Image (cartoon, helix red, strand yellow):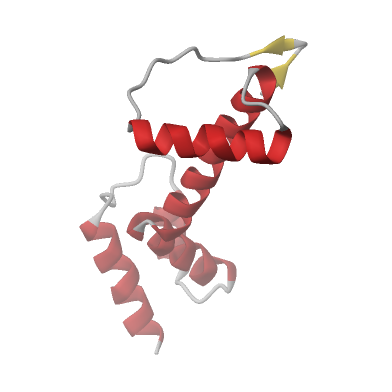
Length: 110
């Protein structure tokens, strides 16, 4: 990311399965002709972004949050519930309890 001309980068050291790393390097060479410098860094950034996109799109909390947002956008939820869900410091817990609330809202709308 770039803000005011300053690039925010993190330098991390991680252990990666050797076979997976070799496959990654081979694919870089196959596609770009080398596995060095910015090409490797860009490919790693892309891999992490793709992993996050997949995980975020399929996580139960994300799915439930999207369902709750859709209900709120359609105005299918009472104003009191919308106010509660929209509060900055909501009293509705995350995780399983939130899923229960969303499911209860769905049932109430049927």
